[in-house]
Length: 487
Length: 109
Image (cartoon, rainbow over all chains, first blue to last red; front, top):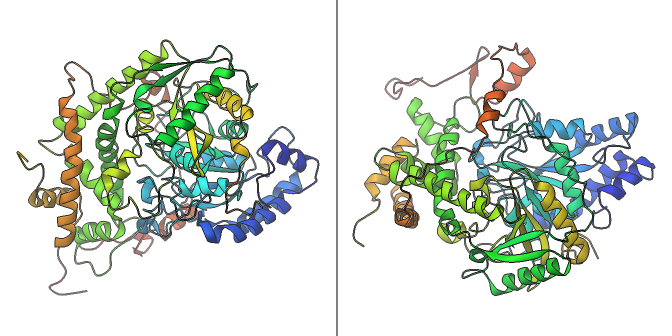
């Protein structure tokens, strides 16, 4: 079966009423996946035997009527470690790596009786915006298979958009949940930094990374975030802020909500067709009784530069651990220890990862630290201050997720700067640690366009409330892509 | 262009720091790409950041204090040790094997 006609609420009702068992649902999920995924390439690795065993166990103990995730098939990005299940981060470096522990979010999935179906393709180590940087396969956009799915969580977004699973979990360092969600017409949430534990997320940019859910509907997304949010003693940067029920308050009412529209998000460099979709969304919010006013985030234009210095610097440090000694790829015929390091890293990492390591090492090196790394940190403060100022007067910020819809496979991969500019509207949110969500807003030439909602720190609830109201007032989320069996 | 931002020698130097190596063709490509990207970074030099503190992390510092846990040793299982070693490229007698630090090419193994 595919997941176009059902959401978590209706699936849960069927499971509780025993209209379908968890085992039947799991089997049907794999049967559909085998039909659909060969055309798309959303999965790197399936967990079929363990998933079927787990589903049978869940059926035996019974579906908890108070737990909407019980028996629900989910997919997980391949940079989130899963005990006993190969986790590669789409890198040759980790081609045969089998984690010995579960990420905290995976532990929570297991504790909630969610069923892990498999691991999703991505840009190597989450570095990229098209999933073309995977060492293993190309993932295709189900709305037009000649186009990229976005990235880096491209496989996760495609798995949901093509109806293979109702929920997938990605990670977002500079837009890696929101941009593929926009390109695939699904809902993707990058929670507040600290809302979700990063324990077991293979580290890229540690001051930026967050794990979040991708779903077809806003309500499903809120339910999935409920499952994974919260403080974790294994992640010192996870927050002890109380976790609300994110599905509460989804009532379609945004009357009186004050929304800011940054002029920098609607200007030059934004595809006019994307702008038109966003302008229509603005009108819809106004019809629903919200006020939308233009504001300025004057330093957001420096976000791309600041981000690529900071994220690359953090990555160059985090990726030192891949040394060919304890785990991961080791080059053959090495002469000595230095040779192990250099050859294993040079043969094990792909070009984009090497580029980031080089940029980061350069930015942190003697003589350049002040002009690059420290300067980027100062600009980051200015970007944060811009957001704080807007949030003195507004409940939420709105704009596009990406400047364009999905581009063609192969079009941008050889031009790093063009690729980096795709992140211009998502990066400031990571630099400031704020929650950001992509909600399907419309189409440009038949390709999905996402609306980005940006909230105050730890105020994901407002984004869900607004996203739900918008979704219920439009029929965008009911459209289905060409590939996925929705005929 | 007034001055070169980064040249092939510097790229070689940075590669050495990062434990990476490039062949001549890769070196040329990477130098060109890094030159352009670092050129983009230079827009930051036009931003007046006088007296602006740098943000290096986002955690709530009051929470961070409370997040410190006891530093207690936890005994791990043989099963875990076995699983860990299975990921190592080379092992001997239940330990991870590391190649000789000094060049072995002289007398071989």
